[in-house]
Amino acid sequence: MLFNHQRITIISVRKPKFKNINQDLQYFGTSLGLFNLRDRDKSCFRIFIELLKSAKSKRPVSSDELAYKLDLSRGTVIHHINKLMEAGIVINEGRKYMLRVENLKDLIEEIEKDLMRTCETLKKTATEIDESLGL
Image (tube, rainbow, N blue to C red; front, side, top):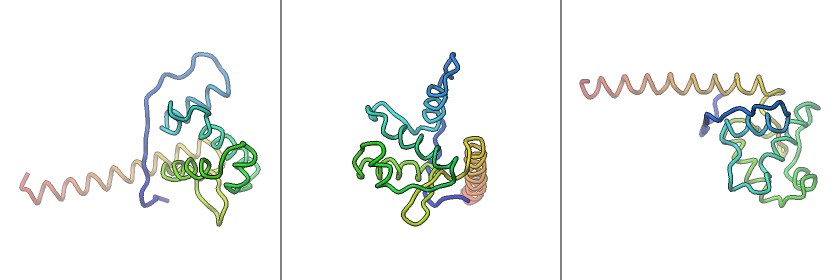
């Protein structure tokens, strides 16, 4: 499923040398452009982790639940949820949110499909433009 306005970001960052689940998750999210230096209290990372936990239990969570559990304002949660939705990582089910798929491997496969569809559309459009310009 391709979202109307999806921002696909892939950043090439060095994978941590030492095996540590927290560092691996940070690497994963940073590689997808989800976490940045402006997020000083790591609220997006913390929201992502909670959504990952809820995916395991197959239970969507509300912004209020996330705000309460993580001691964040609802506005902060909504800001980061919108960013995660724009990235095609989170979907909403009514007034609750969940990861688009149940695990991270499937998430990358879905993002890869989105990227391939976008590239195919761009190629087709480029060909049409080239033909219109006589290139």
